[in-house]
Length: 294
Length: 279
Image (cartoon, rainbow over all chains, first blue to last red):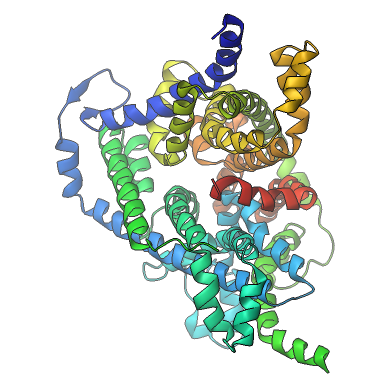
């Protein structure tokens, strides 16, 4: 390699690489190492304690409660979001509605809003006294159904899941629409001539042909859910009432920044990481099908 | 007759789609109207429209809640992080897309894996790192971690775009005696404009809307970004109950993304197909 070229290549790649190594990879590795220490973060005293943090974790009831809540979100939010997204995508692509662009633009819009804005907005929708949900229920004579949605342990998880779905549906809908667009239209024409119903067409043409896209979105979404539940939970319920909506990330955050248990917090983090990895593999295995070419 | 038939066939779909449109749009409409309501109006009936446009909420948001300063902080952090991440990732992506040396392909793979790092996982060690290098509670610290966090994604997306540009242009420019950097910035960059706009829009959204890192790394009131300021405003208003200012704040945060979305709607939604998923 001539010297001139070499200088050029490294001038181009090194700055980004250094930034990445120092502020992405290093913290990542350090987090794993930290989970084996007992450390308050402020003092210089760091004691290596092996797997003690993990032992504590296994016997911490709040960890398991948070874990269950994480699983709730990981299951409910993707299923509902992707179900709706798929339904809307099929409706928009298969029926030739004139106002198609309007729906596409509208449904996608919540996705560009800040999660903080969405969380605050939905806190008001669920507000017990002047929220629009309760006042709507009263207006149509269903006062019995009103709740302090974010303040009751029975409703809080569902109330948190609603805005998560609301903000994500349009994003996945647009992806599925693009995937459906790639299917040759003559396949549907043939199916139509053969007398296949809309549902059969979906089951036998649409679904198998966009399966690979669906599979990737599931994996991406699972990771996304882990990241964004923090903002919703923190702003809308702060883990309450009585840890009923605590998730691992909010618990980790409290352990680190309120209680100063940095080592323990990172053990929770590694636990989270393991869950993400396991879920990714599970969903990959679960959704494995022969790829269909057309 | 066929017109009527197709209208009826589409009716169920249309009802479902319209119903969901209301679910999306009404909360947004409600936010905007609430930002013009007086406190008494706010408590009276959540469904009613304000009697008059009560701009006082916006004035309060700027004067008492310091939204103006937060706005400037957000503008600064977003602009600086965009400049850094776009430039660095563009240069790196060019080399990765064009030069087939193993080392650059390894770097590419490293970035691919990093796409899957959960953000939450590195907050605590980043906090400690920033503390050590005296960039905690600093807007520049925020700029650097924002830029770093989007390097893998930006390189990944740009590599795809740059790979599709024909090599002939560079060869021709090289014959004319143009330097390698000259080629990169004067020939490739303008040709990759669509790709650059897409990554800038995506990163703009993620920086402008970011909350977790700002919450963790910024402690001085005057250094808050908009989302952080808004979250604090919400906590304060629980006791002060000046809801109007909070809603005005929500609208102020929403407006820039709304404008951008209106202008670049196509780029944002088509970037999804090129970027995240077909790779």
